[in-house]
Length: 95
Image (cartoon, rainbow, N blue to C red; front, side, top):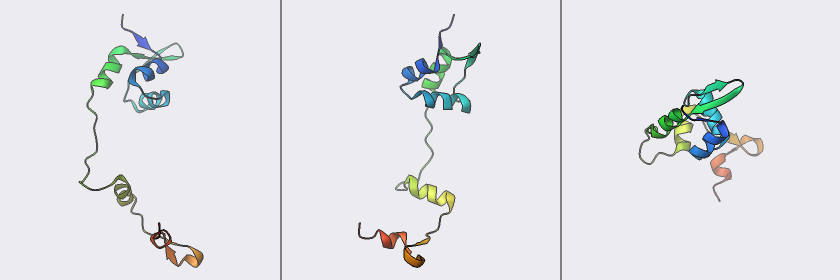
């Protein structure tokens, strides 16, 4: 019979927080079975997750995550300061 692990045990094996394991369960990234009201994770499903290659999003060289996020959100500089006459860059240029 295959070993079944609790969320806590699976988190310790994977060396992540319990909340991360629960998030993966909700996303469907990690499979589980219900035993009564308890959630259990099969050993084979843990091994499958461990062996799955980690996928990093393709990123252009030299482009930071913040710039990428800003591009996605299409953020534009807003006037700040007193009466809205200063931009964020002008306020923090001395730092």
